Length: 319
Picture (cartoon, rainbow, N blue to C red):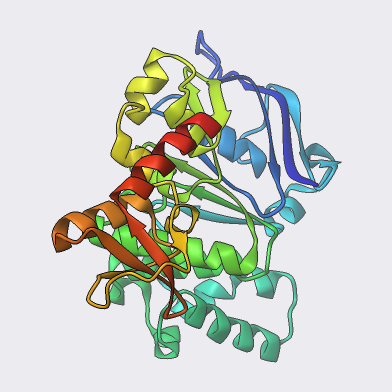
């Protein structure tokens, strides 16, 4: 079932000749991670903001759970949707626990349930429970963004909207937060719409990517399909479609390893959930002919250069 359906949605701001969003249509399945990718001014944030009615559409309609969002009171709609922005949006005068508890309190949860939820979410996003008494100014940028994610999840919404949440954070922290977000997504199965202008971030996170340009959707497909078959030359330039290493980063080791084949006892190990780009780097660094592929710490097979080459060709053909 589709969690969100966007049907020919447009947004025309007064005084502007060109619509910010021009008859865009797409659907997001329950538990799907959709990334909206494009340069500044392409309409991706405007499209996101129409889903929680921070902007009202000039045309078209948006369905959530099968219901037209225009038929829902706007406050009720927003309480059903988690929202994370670049600046975190935390209330500076409120402690971390109170920031996380904003929506549950609006929903009149009892105190014990709220307190338990705060502790549960702090653990989920990797922060100590002792942080509940701190103020946002006492946290680093990455820690503040973790709190922002916890607050978005507080009332257990089915849909999370994220508008360039990691763009102001240093590269190392950003990569760590991306990994943690994927872990949370796998565990909770939320439907996520995530805006970014960072191609690497989009490829790393998305189940499917919406590529936007001048208010229109120019391609909507899986990361591998977009890399292998870009819609036009501009999409090709945007995503670096000729970059074989990017394509390898989207293919898991498990799809290429030789099962039950034992690598040399001194072979470097790589987890089956890692990607082939990481495997290739490890092979080159170790100087070995093959790697031992593991799952839950146990060796399940081996992987060498030939398997990586073969998997790369197969992935391009399938996409």
